[in-house]
Length: 295
Image (cartoon, rainbow, N blue to C red; front, side, top):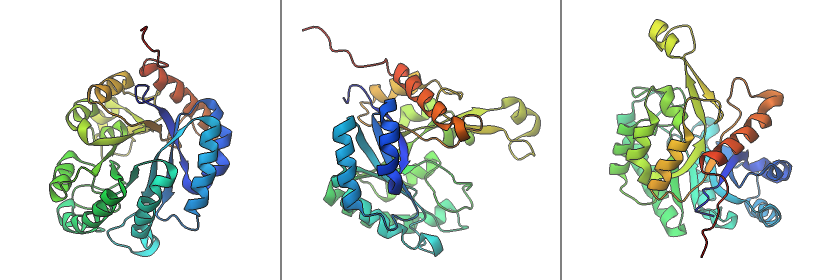
């Protein structure tokens, strides 16, 4: 199935056992299980057991476990984020995945430069833990409203930051959870970026963007009018055939997991309509089903 390059979607980790049986029959081939700031009271051992039962029934894989918070500060609602990273790294094997993903965190209100030492301290230890467990850490490339100079949540949203991060922790167990959308929001062309960084991409989120270049030219990016929208694949500006081509040329062995719940049109009662359209679209972009050659 690595030849196939599985296409899946994201589900809340605490809700996976309820949601997956409802949507797996649509043809999703992988699921990324995500948690916001904390794994909370989710029993990971029991959840893994139930998910494995569903895997046996529907034939999907778990691509990633994700924890999205700020592990560098540990303040307020992020108090359990670092412990959740440790928890997911330790339990990943029960789900059959070797990738735990999330934000790097950052020093709130500080620059990316100022956050690098704390990042190196926290994830230096987590990368050792991950290596011991045979797990890889993948950072999503979302800016979460931050810039180079200030922000919260994440520093891994710019290629210069990636260079600093990977230089600070030169580990094969540290990489990216990449998607074109977050780069397009910064008006970065995702195609040449992916070609350059494909060796560090461990997981791909299926999320696209539409850029309104007419608004950019007239109002700029700091004016009163929105200039970019997050989109479900198949509705945005990106040619995903190009993305899959680059991934395959780079010997990418992961999945593309649709990140829904962002599209301004295909939301609400049209959410799964949009996601299943994206599923079929991405399957076409990869060439359809895998067909073995004659012997």
